Image (cartoon, rainbow, N blue to C red; front, side, top):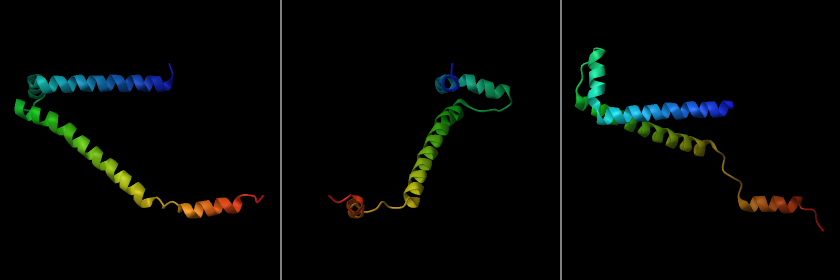
Length: 98
């Protein structure tokens, strides 16, 4: 197994575990509420349902804004291409005459 395959397998397992944990917490929030009560954080089922939806939405929204900012930065800092007329005239100048 190559290093890339091992990393891919690890990413797959982590994503699978997060997905299962998300689904369980979303549809059976009492398990998570009981866990939070056990470690000393008192909360309600409604709070858990709100945050289990709000956190991924927040992360996705910030990711979209980051991608938009990256595209804007790239467009703002990339010099414009040469006009096509200039490129064709350069090609004609370097072309050997017959």
